[in-house]
Image (cartoon, rainbow, N blue to C red; front, side, top):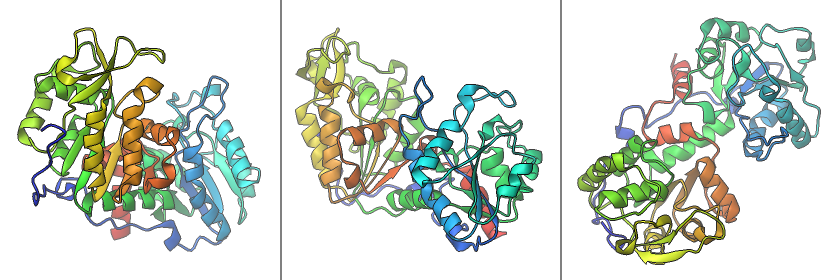
Length: 419
């Protein structure tokens, strides 16, 4: 399929909800359902934010996204404990790089109140005397606790003594069965989802289980290998699957074209070829591209037909004809799911494709959801955030939901609600 082709009208592939692991009806308690007045609420948040070499937060999106649940519990008379993971610490061996101190400082600024950081909190202590209604504390990096990654029930039982209500508001960690995302939800007296988790599930359900057609998915990025299951699942489900970046290069190679020295995975060309063969009318391939001899801000871009790519060329963006064809698909969509840029958007000479795509999604009458770190960076760079209907703060969990997998932290909340 070239970018001038369109899917056959009236053909609707299976819904992702028909695949194992993607429940069409998600039933669980929500924080808003629970009377938290006078209760100790433990919120598992996702504050895994990027830090620079000085320990300064460079993007506080995830912190700001978690404020709604914290504010709601406090406003309704709860005492609130919040924790999160940060980075990849060694359990039981804290270092200066592992602390949530920068998060505590930013939370204090955003909430306009002091947010104390509590270390060595698992078995309680004098700090618990602060937990009067309306009090808020931040508990140090939960992945420093021995047994966290192993989903230790013993660790969860110790933590459960600290709280009355467990609230998971960390959708970004919902695909990981760990003590604070899974075991604690099993043993806590009450287990519920926070507003961020609920909003993420509602948005993904709307996009994938109850979409308005045509459903268009955009998957960019460097490697087919990291998104192969996703690509196959989406190809079976969507009406159009747009690929970009190194993923697109692999598909172009699979279609028998030259890609020069471009980023690709030749070893997965057969997998890409199989997707093209099984769903020949769904994956639009580029007809023109933007090439250069090196990846640099001062590199000289050159627009070429795909057939004219030379052996020393690097494909770094899609060309204007390809972008226009994608824009037409997006304009006619009913629902759009976007994960990943379609070019080296960080560099001005090769940002045109992703910029045009971002604006096309923003201008489309379709309902749109976007997720992934590079996707959010592109959305912010091109100033379209206010025109994307839902922006997911999750990474791996977002992708696993798209793949139709069971998210362990959500599944346990559903089990608790049905018990």
